[in-house]
Length: 405
Image 1 (spheres, rainbow, N blue to C red):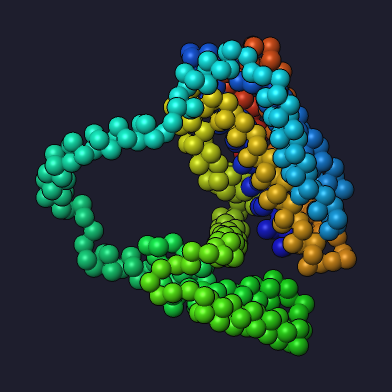
Image 2: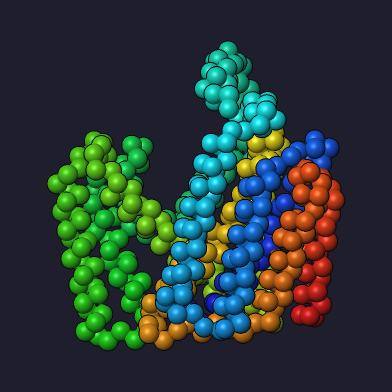
């Protein structure tokens, strides 16, 4: 991982955390300010304080400028500590009992009502109106034929999609009934280890010819073994019903690998675009990638808040802090572990970017603002909290644009 990739990666993770903890929390607070939604104080204080501890550790790492393999493993292990802390506090809090307000709000929010009841009603309504909807669907298709994709366009889209879809299909094991194919499954488990060998060879530029042959030989050996086992233990008609864990674990691992490949290409394109347009890598990571990664959190948490009542707002606010903690500890931690592993025993050199410390400062300011304002306002989400978070984020973005221009 070169300095440009490290720079844009660090700014993407911190920019996404800043966006979620500021803009997303501010949007949720502003939207529900009239409902006087109240969130749990212990959970909120726990998440914000632990995130501040994580950011303090990251500041020390950036100031030090180096990351060893053991330091990267310690950074990632902080997420395990966080999970244990959340579980312990949750068990302790529930053992003491919840107050009537929490029970009433949970019941009224509808989150503890069985989903199947609503599902049955929806199914009955759909059955009763099935003929009507079918007729409307036919009329809609007749009236909107012009909007349908023509055959040449469909063929063109299919051709453009194949170079990316075909390799993924042949390297990611799939065991669902609808997409099961024994030949494809056997080929996928055979080619998956080979793809990992290719990635290992491409990532490590110091591999000698003999070492490269060993890496490819190991990949070919494991691929052959997996292919033989898959051929002997599966059927043509249906996917395997037993010993599904290896299939699911392999599918998950290869999906992560392909996500990594696509992310690497995307980062490479952004770095090239930055060189062409003269835009700083840190600005691209802090804006384009950070906003793109955080839009899903904005939509999901806002929908949960609007439709889930007080319990939905609690889950959304908790997600606004737990998600960045995961991305910072697990995302950056695994990246540092991979980089330190390839360069072991030499530590990973972290680029000295003063804008990173500036982003961290504004991020800490937003967390402290929320930590001070919410308890003072009886843990109710309102426009005062949201306005302050919006102001902090806009100030940070304006200052960054002024520095770049």
